[in-house]
Length: 615
Image: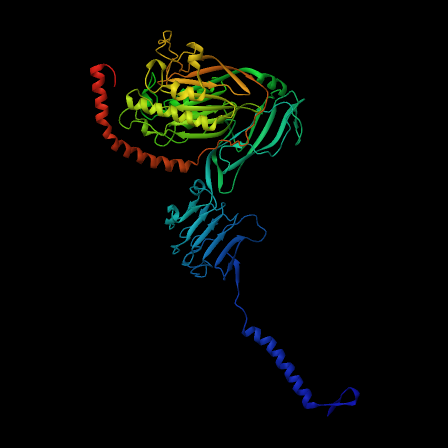
């Protein structure tokens, strides 16, 4: 039999059979070969709860547990013995439990001996018994804070739960957050979602969300770009938001302009300041500066007032008193320990520096202002005297603090707060003389910018002592500064040997104010007084008098805004604590080594007994 080919050719039957066999063989191979050489499965899926499912990537060893079936949240199953679908699975190297899974089931990952890390979503609020039995090298990363971790119910057999080497927290908690909201003026434009000045810009931000006012009993919302021109009180709604790596807990304290808020969403209500009136007011007027040594030294400071007070209680009382002084600028000295209690009471002064630490490593100088502050610079004295003698000045980082105050729009004043070496025996006098020279050098190298300058604080200097520290020669003359007390109360006389020098004037005190005018701002001192900052029964809380200086000023109206303006921010608390511990060790060593000062100290005592004065 044959088949006729086109054009009359014939195809033999053998050929047809061969072709059919080849086709059949090819078809068999197509079906068999893939089955014989199939690639291994790279994903294994299944259920581990009613609405909880899992996917295991066998190539990477990562197991992901999440919600299935359209649910909004889910629980993992709890298991006994070896029932878990993951029991003893050595392929599993890492586990990711995603958001809105509420738990880790009992014995869920028992026997997964190669498990190295497990990530728990912030929604996990319970971990079953023996959840990681046998997973001795697994590191747990909790996508929340240490505070929230302590609220999680963790069953028995999870001894790793308090091991810092086994548990890592993805978020750091913030105890206090605060924003500074500038005083609005008539004519200002609304800028919704504008970032405000905050304490820790790396940790969180605060934004203006809405601006409202009441009109005929109804709430009116302003739009972005609207002008503030209503004769009403505006409410500014401000929201705090944590940046990556940080979280705000239920007990986080929120502040706006130093005033506590109920939650992370706060409202501050302010009256407008007429722009034209403010400009007119700033052309001439009164500038009030206050300086106070607040005795923030632990234990010693407790006895320095007229009544015993503990450090934190004293700081709180002084903060309340200072907050009510109604001045433009406040500087404090010996603000070592208790600073947070002092600062918490001073809500009327939202612009401020932040603590540099306690007594062991801090400078003890801080400033508070009703006007914006910039460019904080802390400088330590090059030479201090005394660890067990003198006034023990070498046991702290005393020095001076520079700040730039924007007193009026475009008008800036340089302000320096100082705390000089104390004591009046020869080596302390020498140290103080060196302090004055160092300060003069800093001023001449950095502040010859034509702006007005005020230097105030605890100088530990009196003209009438007539010692070799010589404020005039070492500081006033080189910088052109003048002493307020000498100018206002002593006819400009600073030489105690001058016949008309007023030796008995109480104002020639350890706490002083120096000043010089600038090209755009002329300063004229009017008075240097001691305000009554005492308790309800006249109690004094420090061994110093507060010092209030009043200047009249005249402003030329010319703006002189610096190119670089840096807003003060607090130092990381953990870093401060670490540095404080290191400095405490240093201070102890200094005190031990300082016994070599004892012969000098004894010699000064003998000199005092014999001659009635120190050499």
